[in-house]
Image (cartoon, rainbow, N blue to C red; front, side, top):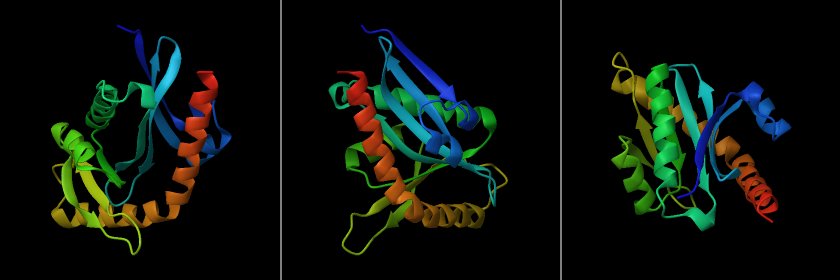
Length: 170
């Protein structure tokens, strides 16, 4: 069994990438035997519902299928519960990924179909008890627009993350 550690970093604590610090990303990093092998990135939005927008979870391909994605998602869920904040995820995902999120309490909200693109699944977690269905709908729609704007940056960051992890493991 490998030594496993998780580190939560706020935006001002990010040391790996100036762009991530400036964009205000929070992260949960997974280290196995001292090497970063996974990461969850999310951003905070305060209006209309205080919400963390989960941008992506990445686990190095050599560790896929070992439950690390579930573990890092549980760490994020606990942060959301502790902070009493809702989480929203908008992502293209297979049924396997969707089932993983559902197993961890995420609720399917709907799909966004893009012309000549994959469809994106929208899910949420831990909505505040005071939030109406309309409040949740408004927040998810707001983040849908935001996700359209950051999709290109997200793909670029994901590629940078893969390159960084590959360099660290060479």
